[in-house]
Length: 135
Image (cartoon, rainbow, N blue to C red; front, side, top):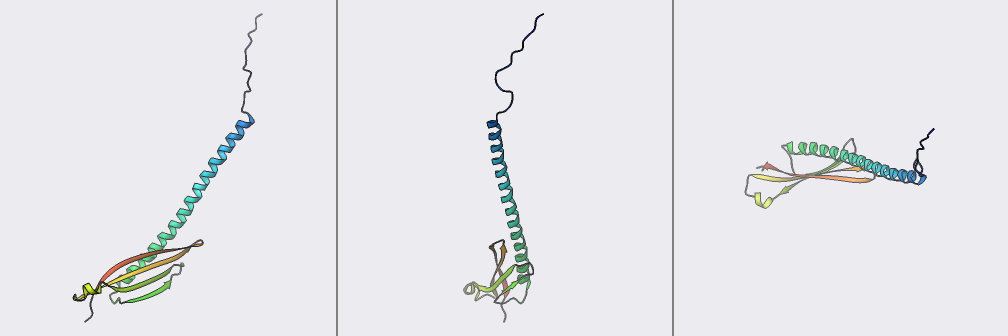
């Protein structure tokens, strides 16, 4: 009777403890990096939300100011219900260039300030409005 012997390699058939530890270390480093990127992305989205709301508030207030037919030189400040502080100033612009014209040019500067966590943020809009001079 003949028996065939199957030769086996002398090495172990699984992973060594060192290989498993290295694989776990690489996996944990990759997970930490991915979680940090996700966290940074969430902070960016939150900050972007604050800017979008500030722009909408500023555009709305700027539209109110520019639609006013009786607008005159003045400055004021107000705080909205959602915590945005608005500072606006209407000043004459290019007075020497428009002194002989029947129109006056007004510059409107509007700044919106808000708090984002511990940081104070600000957004400024500026525009010009042409108004007929009062006789």
